Length: 436
Image (cartoon, rainbow, N blue to C red; front, side):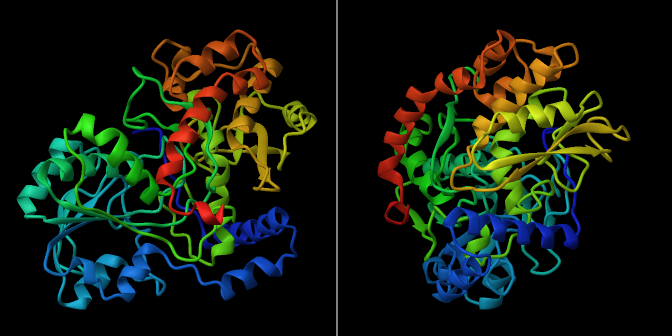
């Protein structure tokens, strides 16, 4: 899918981003720069994968196991869970299923690695990119899978596709009576829900069921919600044996850098946890003709267009949005929109994640850009009734209201009732509520 034209970043960029995220953690907690690192060292965060590995993968013994994962499925020693299971010697790992970008992460935009034999482990890796229920049922059946493990780092946005890979696999598991185990990982943008609900008629590969844009849940919590709220009607059955192995020692109020966990990019254009903070709001620019920063080292933080000037940064800073500053910025994308052209715009600097609302920020950026450059601003696809912005937003409301001249506050106010309804619904499926 062309929504994800990804860029592999340098180690230097990742190191700089880690420093930035640590500073953000200090701002969010009111502590000095060193304290988040000390807190992480003193309160070891253990992922669901690490907890199960420490238990010798006991839950998996006696089953024919299939694993859905990508390069984020790692343990404390940076080894992959699949490698660890194979090395254990007594886990019957019969198949791996690679989502978009592939199991080992070698594929780029809207692509996969195909089906192959993994050279490290000898395990068959099936191409699961874009697979729906029927595809997973076929692959599970061919491999003789009895127990499915899901372990992929999510970023907390409805339109990030890995949660829908999990959803399709759960549908297949429900129909086939398979056990489903989710190895949970932190939500890097926290445990608060924001934004509009996906509306019927706007379902797509980047939003298949009815959750809000920033769901504020881990994949384990989402699996519990999917199983109880959507599977009985959609698949005709629940996953009868659903197990979520929770993260230990994680608080949904903390930034990812404070966990002490490494950040293998979940996709090539999600190079740092800082990217994830902005992405759930600035990804809306994929639905416009402006650049969302693909082809740069700071995708979704650099936003602009050839017509952009310093006036846009001035307008945005004048809006005094909480927890964010905007730097006037110029860049030349190496691919995607405006390849080889100089774009003028802004770099988004999240200064306090505790008060930052990425979706309000993204909407404000769009409304100010259209107001500042009314003749140049355009929606991707020309603003037609089936434009990509509708799939990202979950309805045509954002485009219609922006085109009618609505303010960002009016737009954000328009979804508060549906957000409140979703927030009430999700409460019963939360695992980490005591640490919010």
